[in-house]
Every structure is written in structure tokens, then in C-alpha cells.
Length: 338
Image 1: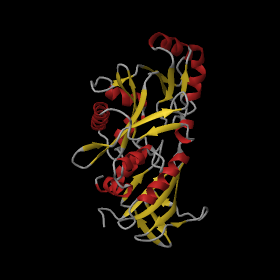
Image 2: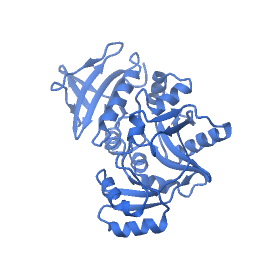
Image 3: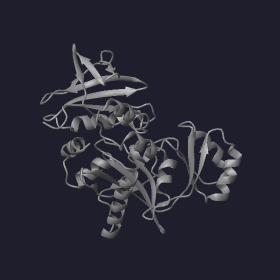
Image 4: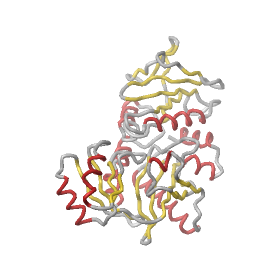
């Protein structure tokens, strides 16, 4: 038996990433060690939390049909199944986007005193906001951040366009500050196309950054805590068929994700040490992935993913397999060291 008994795996979200979240959550639930833990799958979207399936110790997965799924009691994070109350003592969060990646769900669990798999509520909130996260790293000497312009909904778009044209070099990327999976992102090659891209980004959230495009090779690396130290996983190089690593490239097979990346030991160690430093600088917990562009003048930080994709084809499981680790054992390690 592990430190915990009843593991709730929460997936689905209130964002555009909810379907990807479901695939990640189902994968995680299927790989958690069923000889150590009871596993309960919870679909949570727009305040409706329902039990999708459960798996008792050393038993088969039992799904609940839609329309007959038990409701989660938010007062104490429990559920009543066939008249028996089950109170979860650990939560593995696999919600991409709000509320599982921006700290809201973590804050709920913190108030109840229930341990969970990801960063704290505060760290999640900081890391999820691209502008806030970059602000924590701008002055560090171990990684670069591309110049950007912050835009809040309601600002004068013509004035923003002039500011961007004066401060940044095109092409630029317009990105919602609190989005993922490349939703709402546009690559803009000339100033006259900025207003439309800005309006599109606002469909995903109330704030955005216009970030100078950086040419170079794209890499990603993940880190986790052993309880005593921060360790990194193998580096992946991303080669996309598209102009950049957008939603289509990520989920429709229009990219190569080469693991381990075909790079020399010095560069590999630089990316891994940088990933560990960012993890520590932000105060991360659980498994966290960092994305980079390697340009001629150095390594540029793109963003941090505190709830990275966890399907069988996702980047982090590829890193785990390349490191020679078993995914079930790895998930046990994350759970037991939370």
C-alpha cells in the first residue's frame, strides 16, 4: 500500500482544452498502480463534477453510464457510491486550462487539506499567466525571454499596434496570457494584421501578449522533484511541418517529436539544467514541462506547462519512456512525493 488509498483523477476543464484533458486523464488513470491505490475518475466541467469510473484495488475498471454518474460532494471532496460514502485522500489533477492549471482547483484542495499532484495554487496561477511567468524569469542570466507587449482587453488597439511596431520586430506572435494547446495564438507578419489577431486572442481570455518571434530550433524538457532534489527528463526536439508548433501540429501528426533530441552533451545538459533552475525558481511541484527556442544568441524560454499533456503520444510520457522508466512507477513516485 502507498501513502494514500483513494486517488481521484480529475480531468475535463472549463477551457478549450477540455477534450485533450479527458484523453490525458484517462491515460493517467489507466497507468496508476491499481495494486496500491483505488482509482476514481472524475469529469469536471463548468462546476459539474461527476464520477465517470472507479477501480477498486486489484479490480477491473467500472464505468458509470452517462445520466447515472454519481455527483461529487464539493463540501469535502467525496462521493456516495451505492449508498457508501467515499472520501478521496489524494487528487491527481489532469485539467488543462482553468480551473486545474491556473490555481483555482489547487486552492480548493488546499483549503480542504487534500494533497495533490501539481504545483501550489499560487505557483500555478503565476506559471499559467505567460506575462507573469516571464516576469519571474526576465532578469535571470540562465535563460532569455523574448521582448513582448502586454495587452488588456479594452485597450486602444490602434495604440497597441503602434507600440508593437515601435518596440518589436515582425513576425510576432499574439498569445492569450492564460491559454494552452496553442488556442488563440496567431503568427503575425505585418502590423496591419495585428488588430484581427488581437481580437481572436481575446476570444480565449481577457489579456494577451504580443511577443517577438524568435527563429531557431524548438526544444522541450520536463522536470520533477524526487523529494530531495529536482531532476530533469530527456530533451525533445520538435520539428513541425507547419509554420510553428500549433494545435494542428501538436495533435494531428504534423510534427516530429525527436526523443532524445539529436544534440551534443553540452547543449543537452544546458537545457536540462535550465529546466531544473526554472522549476526551482518558480517553486514548482509534480511533473512540469518547459518549452524553448534555441536561437543564434542563446536559449529562449517560451512557456511552462504545469499540467502537461499525458496521453500515450504526449511529450512527457515519451521522455519517461526514453529515460528507461516505467510510467506506472513514475506516477507512483509523483503521488508518493507530493
